Amino acid sequence: MQNPNDPNITGTAINYLYVCTRKLWFYQNHLEMEHTSEKVDLGKHLHEESYQREKRREWNIDNLINIDFVDKQGILHDIKSGPAMETAHIMQLCYYLYLLKQKGVTNRKGVINYPRQRRTTEVELTPEREQEVETAIQKVNKIATLPTPPHADYMKICKSCSYQELCWS
Image 1 (cartoon, rainbow, N blue to C red):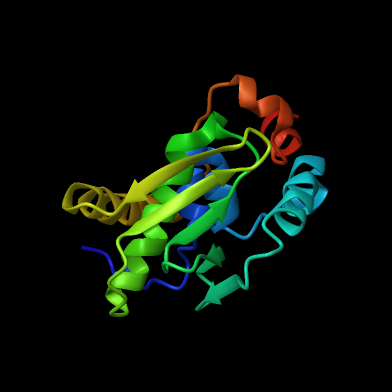
Image 2 (cartoon, rainbow, N blue to C red):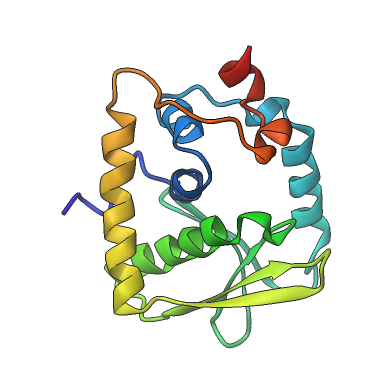
């Protein structure tokens, strides 16, 4: 098993693994394009405006994970703009729970909040999901060390991706 505390693996990297391996390769090789994305800016605005009453907001742990807020019951919450990439969101939150478990935090539950849709998705770090996280860590490390980015097929989401020009120009 790869070291779960590999300093190069962030929650974003786990998310990108489930969205697009080419995007992941660029990100892991320090070709970050999020600063050029209006969609990313809108997501940041949504994050800032949502759940302002929560007292325990914005937790960065080891520059690997960013927890949006922790509620009164100690449940982790991650705010997302929409559920289109829900599998990626779930695995990102499982990765957060996995890393916290490695640090001795016993919370195994989290919630993904979709404030624009007024819906939530509960997430639990089960033994099966722990195994999936460990496999994801291995895949991220493998993709990051490829000499060139993996091939990608054009998908509907490519239209709004901050890496679109890099991939398709």
